[in-house]
Image 1 (cartoon, rainbow, N blue to C red):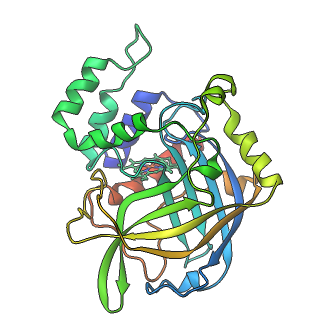
Image 2 (image 1 turned 180 degrees about the vertical axis):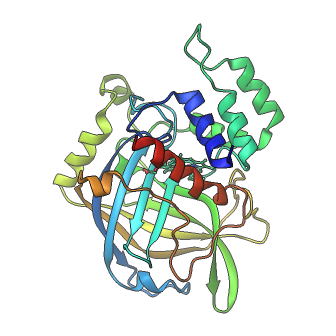
Image 3 (image 1 turned 120 degrees about the vertical axis):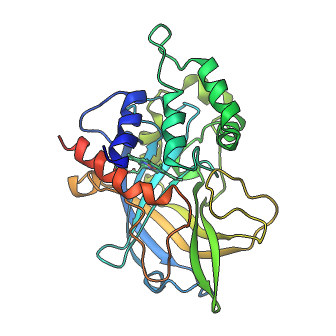
Amino acid sequence: MSQAVKLIDALNGTFGRHNGYRVSHAKGFTAQGRFCPAAEEPRVQIPMLNNECKVTARFSVGGGKPGISDKSPTVRGIGLEIGNGSDSWVLTLISNPVFFANSAAQFRAFLAARIPDPDTGAPDPKLVEAFNEANPNTVPHQQYLKSVVPCRCYSSEQYHSGHAYRFDWSGREISARILLEPEGGRLALSKEEMETLSDDFLHDRFLEKLCDGPARWSLKLVIANAADNVSDPTVLWSGTHTMVDLGTIQVELPDDRSESTKKVFDPTRMPEGVRAPLDDVFSLRSGAYAESAARRSV
Ligand code: HEM
């Protein structure tokens, strides 16, 4: 059995199989907009980002359940296709600064510990605790989710790569994580909204936001310091970091054309000037996304 099949079986094993939906980030919708280059040319050279180009975005709630509540304490995601054709950049980012696993085995074990107990319909807390004890590197992801209130709109969430990509910076190689920072900063739901909003508020609230004008984020590089771990997406980076502003992602209109809703946001599609992260997770993604796409189209 291939690695991709094992990873997708692990997701289906925890969330169930829901035909027609993505195996992970099942609940979501697509929109379109554009990328506008930064006013000042960045010192990192990514030629395709020198010009304005089209963007397709998909916003999602993490996990493989299409009916998950928009108030649930899990990650929010964004899939971005910047440009199209051979020189384009696909980024799939989450609202958590770190990921929950640093290897295929840990990804599967994390999910196995969360298979719902048939009696309660929820994960067995003893299995989760045992997993956490044996895998302390995965705890910061869970702690972050406990420390924040879910976002009030997809447009007021920040999104992170976890992976550290590699770039040329005046003749030397640097590593940097990607940060998508919302105009106006991150905004959480109020206590009252947590109590009164429907479980599906994120779609309509985002469309209301677009009626008032585009949703905008700065696309930034967070450059690794010498002490930062660049090969493990579960490790938080601490201290201050140099940031490079690459430009603005601007989302303008909903887009439910099937060519957009069926898109596979495979992050191994990278333009000239961007090199793949050197961790044990990035290389797992292309095969897993293809297997998920094959299952959702049956
Ligand atoms: C072992 C590593 C990973 C596996 C096996 C995995 C698996 C998957 C799968 C199967 C999908 C659905 C793909 C589709 O049907 O098109 C998905 C979607 C997604 N993943 Fe991952 N993932 C991994 C790592 C990550 C990481 C590190 C991030 C970000 C930090 C991430 C963010 C996302 C997002 C935002 C989506 C939704 C994309 C969309 O809207 O189409 N994943 N993932």
